Image (cartoon, rainbow, N blue to C red; front, top):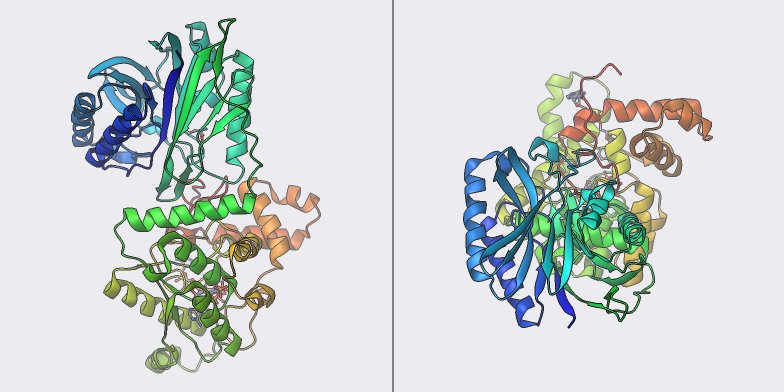
Length: 538
Ligand SMILES: Nc1ncnc2c1ncn2[C@@H]1O[C@H](COP(=O)(O)OP(=O)(O)OC[C@H]2O[C@@H]([n+]3cccc(C(=O)O)c3)[C@H](O)[C@@H]2O)[C@@H](O)[C@H]1O
Ligand SMILES: Nc1ncnc2c1ncn2[C@@H]1O[C@H](COP(=O)(O)OP(=O)(O)OP(=O)(O)O)[C@@H](O)[C@H]1O
Ligand SMILES: NC(=O)CC[C@H](N)C(=O)O
């Protein structure tokens, strides 16, 4: 008889141990009632990932212990493979436990603790050292936890210990291209060791991270034979059997779905990141300043797709420098998306500040100071609406601007969450065009006119910044690839330009440290992924 396994791709809330336990119990019971005899949950499914310093609180671990007892007594008639932290002799371990009818059958401790990029596991966990294999419906299952798959060792060790099938539980966050990276890595491990691998991933947004789910199954030849959807909770039902030659087989045809559009995948990541940040932090909705420029236009579309038009409010705040077409385009986008707007001109506040500051400025010529006052008038208005309405303020800055500091502290940087802070400007345009292919949302003129902060007469971004095409290319090399100035110049960019961009990036760390968090979609986002000193003589 075939072994029926369900991969349960769930979206826990970090720290909500009791709520997550209920979710695990109901998913287990549903899997059992649907005929599964084994259900596999992701890494640290009980606590959510990453629980960070909550792991250091004794009370947190006490709640984990009592939740495990509760799950063991409620989720019966099915075997569970479950991720949770375990306090044991020697410290805390990141484990995959096998539970059957109230009993702990086996427990595997993660061996490779990632401590690069966004990961910080060595701060909390000790490494395990041995393989764990358990018997279930006549087959021997090996266990690994996420990073174990990315390093040499644990898979071979499990095979040596007799594993015929490998269950890999994961909390693997998204970045562009990650889905393909995982599938080819796991495929290589499966074909290299000649055993099928079931890859169960977490789904959901957690602060800056988005876990995309996209769990999958590869056969012993390394082909992907089943895939769960990305960016949604899902179940994947897998049947495993032995053929007449006693070889373990997944009973499924090859999954030959076409590769998804890379822009669609990034867009979906942004939508889930915003939805979960807003929902998991208990906001009723979101508010943002809509200027008729491409950044706030894309941010609005993402917010509407994440939350629904009725939970989003767009505020137009024209100044003396705002072109008529900016207001027209902003209103047109709001109409297309069905979003309510409010118009609050900033001129009275701007004039009041100029008047109040006149003695302090003592006749000095106008400069960027006056530009920033306008951005800050908008910040005050938007934060006031956020306070009154209980809706979070979404900031609209993109990665190119955040890199070079082209944004005003406490002005357009004011807000709680920054959906596109890891999206470079050229990608902003691509994503806007992708969104319009799903249904018209962003007026064409927004995508074709020159970008402008509209903080003084006839201003365009290119008065202060290089063309975005070169800027984004240099930024990618400098920030994501860690290339030095000479190496970037050697790729054909002017020496003076590269030095200027690098200087701006280095000098604006102070701004980024004060910026709200936002969705990570690249392999090097600002935040926990790039920890630079503010005060630096480098
Ligand atoms: N190392 C450091 N540590 C801590 N604080 C530091 C600092 N260096 C400067 N500061 C502080 O930061 C201030 C400078 O920052 P800030 O006040 O923001 O002003 P600043 O960076 O001088 O100007 C903002 C720039 O962003 C542009 N902008 C604004 C708004 C929207 C857009 C857009 O297109 O989206 C563009 C604007 O045209 C201008 O070029 C200094 O006066 C000082 O108070
Ligand atoms: N007239 C306006 N009405 C409402 N919000 C505005 C207005 N001007 C600027 N903002 C807000 O301030 C942010 C900074 O925008 P700004 O126009 O200065 O530069 P930008 O980076 O080109 O952004 P965008 O492409 O959205 O215009 C905008 O995204 C928007 O949220
Ligand atoms: N939680 C983990 O161990 C994640 C690390 C792994 N390399 C990944 O991103 O998929």
